[in-house]
Amino acid sequence: MKKLFLSISLLAVITAANAQSFKAQIAAHRKKYKDDFLAEQRSPLKAEDLHNLRFFEADSTYSIVAKVELLHNQPVIKLTTFNGDSQEYVPFARLTFTLKGKPLQLTLFKSPSLTAIPQYKDHLFLPFTDQTNGAESYPGGRYIDINANDIKDDGLAIDFNKAYNPYCAYSDGYRCPVPPIENKLAVRVGAGEKAFAGEKKHR
Image 1: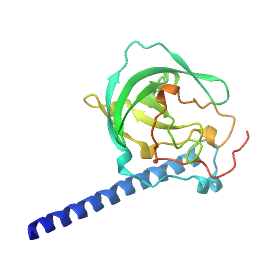
Image 2: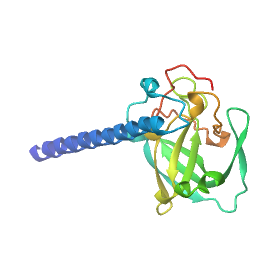
Image 3: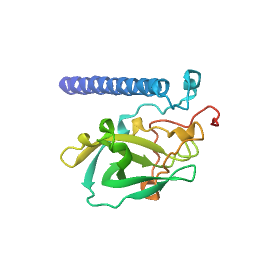
């Protein structure tokens, strides 16, 4: 009985340490995320706006591994943007995974124009909507950036704690793709960035 108690206690300590480590990783990611607004020349936010950025608590249960089915010879499609324009993307892969006990699927996209730039050649785009939109998070959905090199053995780690708002959540004057209907998740994703607390700007 004593050994069992010690084992349970040790497991609890390890679990708590892992949770703290995960929260520290997400905190570092969010700091860089905020810093990038100040470094980006076309950023919609200034230093005085950053306090209006809000996030869900870091939650490791929203960090999952998806099965990757690469899509070959896909035609270029146009994703509608929030300003009524469109941008060209190519469906790159189909992702299947389980989140909060529900089997789900998303399509991962590649931008021909963006990946033509050497530093973004491996960049992939994952736009999605979920049941938090319009209440807790931006009504138009959120994005996750993916690096193609992170796909290993037909698997891809996806952390919804890193989901972020498009620039259109903060200001008009940007061409932000609307997540396609196929990427509507029938689950609440209580992770990542929440709705912006400040007033939307006009450019």
